[in-house]
Length: 572
Image: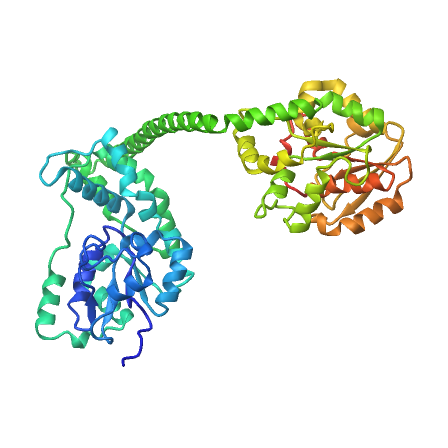
């Protein structure tokens, strides 16, 4: 029995589409040591493209193995499917497991020329040969673009980096150099693939030479207007720059297309010895280049206007669909919070009148509590954090009657909050006790200062007026002790914690607070989700603690034109 093959596929060419992959496949298929799999239409595209990972993955690995296994185990099987170029990392990783020693080839073509060729191929499929259809700026172009998958096929560097993580020795070729120096390029490819050129003899050699000397198959050359070329040049400019920076490839094919589409200037014969004529020629060239750049900018501006109009229309439709699908949930949220939630002013009135601690739930706390996979950049999630946040939703968790838990308002119509509610409301509604009273989380957000103004500032200041204040926040925190808010305090001290992931240190933080505070100290917490939990624990120790969140940044945003709190870095 023959030993099992190490690779299902020995030679993989992942594109690019319209990058001479069919021509190269025909060249290598003439070698006696290669084996093109049998055409299995419609599952495969001829005997060249198996399309396992993009179309046939559900058929299973055994199907792919049967298709690709040559009659002689010493022959090298080939799969030249350009759609593999933009496979996700997980699929490329699976490819590596199935083909650990495969030789991967990636041909890169001028992205403008490749885009034109791809669009022409789509037009051929749609209109047939010799239809006379012209590709102009307008509806037809915008209909064709999504189907041509220009971004996926043309994201050369992104695709390369995904594949290189698994095949660091992959061979990347310049399409123009491949055809300018065919013999040298094919010799290099054969050596890379482990094919002995000396084995090309007899009819194999004859067929090989014929293909090497022949033309590359091209799509029907549907006429393409110059403004389409200008648009595509702009669309692909980033790819061109990325390829230049990564591989050092300088493409010329696309520029040749643009040049061929320009009107030919009338020849100018300078008079002997007249330098002014030479200067005039230079100025005319500058003028022509300026006009060309203006045309590019104009075409791109028109396209952007068109695309923006389409995006706005699609967003309106999607929003109507979303609103319809979530209206019952939003109604339930509004009705529930209307029954149990104080407004912003009454929230601070209750804290002042009853000397309550304040435990705030914002979008971050809710998402951490309800979603195992959600973390914040300054606080990783954990089962313990989710459990204690869930417990902290109960105002009477550790200190009955001494903690006011706050919740966000319904934010009806806000797309961000709609996403938060979809993710968290199924759990949150089971934790809200209709017999309890909850505050409004917005009391430390810009909306409070925008609505309440000077009255709102006074409401906060009276909470610590004449009292000792202990501010607990992370080292390097963006929290600022603004005199407009805090100069009425008798004395202010700081206790600094780790700058991130404070929850894991919550017991030590609590001990430090209890050890430093007196019975009249008011503890101000700016520690993200950990503050929500510590407000309960500190209240249970007989102290008053306020989870103040981004109060200073919120004040600065409203009254001194500062950045929104979420736009600030978590530390200095």
